[in-house]
Length: 219
Image 1 (cartoon, rainbow, N blue to C red):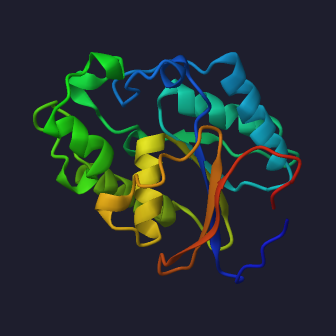
Image 2 (image 1 turned 90 degrees about the vertical axis):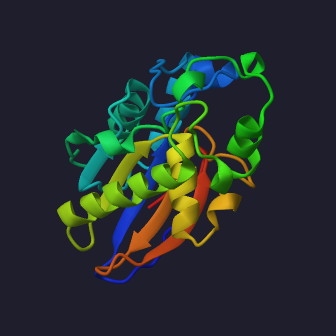
């Protein structure tokens, strides 16, 4: 599938990392834990790379956490063009979940904080659990995206590997979804790619949301 784009547009390919054991076991998988990809997660990332193998990536940025970095490596390993170096950016790290990080969801007592975390992101302060708020995560996402845009050139294809909470919050915000509704449709799936175009003024336009590996090649 080919998307036409203005000559000066940058194209961003935002990838959520592949499945980890924490994802499978319903364990909080925030920025202070760093599980590896499962065998299925690696396979998914490779299949996504096959879908993207004809895209010439000019730049690649990743969270420093190994689940995101490995996903970027596996996606690029299937590429048929000259590969960029993966640049690690700390601000692409997953949302810091504080005291909840690495703990099973079932072990966390019901509370207003937990309710807000899942269902009312705008009200989640993170104070009780020593976590980041969604406001902080969104603003960090905007900051790192601005930094990437400053490094990129017009017409660049840019691969960005990151995490479910950060990307879901950031990308929904880019398409105008209010903060309190960024989780209404769930998190972006693992090993999915969401594509945006951006002009020189950093006006972002959604091209494709949460594409999962398939027989259809992307360009």
